[in-house]
Image (cartoon, rainbow, N blue to C red; front, side):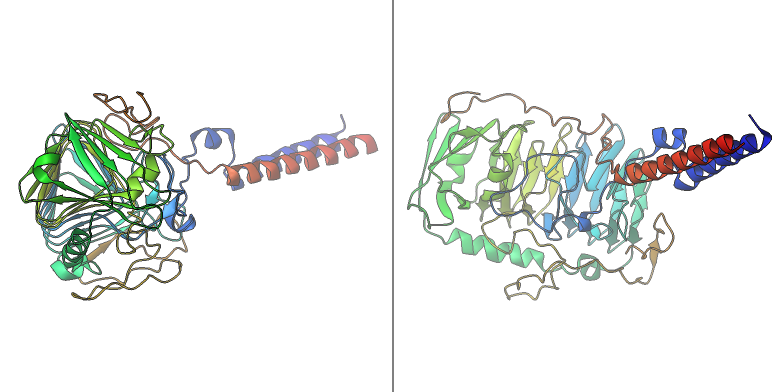
Length: 467
């Protein structure tokens, strides 16, 4: 080989290696590169009617509406794991897992994938935020691919951080005062009470019967009677574990009005929807049932969801406190305190399709005025940075040039003592599983590197032939 050819080959190799480093594509980088998760604001705004997703790992839709509301205090202890979507707490919020570990808010390891916009507020607390030693509160985990990052936190009082608060590039603000911290949802409790009374006044269109531990809701009135409305007393519902919804017209929402003020305790074991089992994660009706059903506990003062199964549908309970060890799939709006303390139980964000008030909203609603009906939200728009508030501590986003983040029979599903866990869900400590790797940028860069290598080889061969 001539000296010129050798020099050309060495130069070409150096150029290829340099290009590999520029693109971040040396072999070790490819092997260790952390997967990128698309920002919620970069995915479709809201699921189409009848296309609500089952349980998955990646962000799939954007929803800025309230997913979980406690008018009083919110406590996450025991082995509870995650709360998907926007969590709004009127009082104090305490995160104190018994054995320590991670509690996720905003985005979860396995859920609906219907998330607040990346970088937006995912936890709003009117009072104080307390994080116990050994507990990590992880807000907006993995949302690192947008113009804004992670999930932001607004607190009216103080942040008592004996554990760790991770916002993944989102902002954290304390000392704002309750109303400012909860804005634009400061009057959400009024909305919950108003909607509960309105739905409670609807006349039943179908029937409900209780047999043993099973309650059957049979639709009536035919198509066009949306929502399908059922009435059942708190006493009759108490202690039930299997729930069957039959003869529900396609696409119509369901309201179960629970009457009377006595406490209600149920342990969901099995849910059927139009002849199919709906509460297992592999069910094709999971997202549909979760999005169409709502239980309205207008006068109940206490609700307990026991066991470790899946409660399917939203909960509207303006006067109640709630104790949760089962997982919830739908909106959860409670006027009093919420305590979640099960073993790996989660809250999955499925908007209720029966009213625009509780449906998916792609952008943050305007501040509410008590006594008025919220207006329809505007079309989706790019999130804008949150202005810095007095006393705000802002975590810079991870990158230059980005905005400051502010199986039984069909009609009788067989009850089971547990629900099949979501495939590839969170790890034992509650942290998120590896999700949503975006490989396209790497493939493009790899192609560029391959092309550069081919060019180097071609030049080298020509030089060798010439010499």
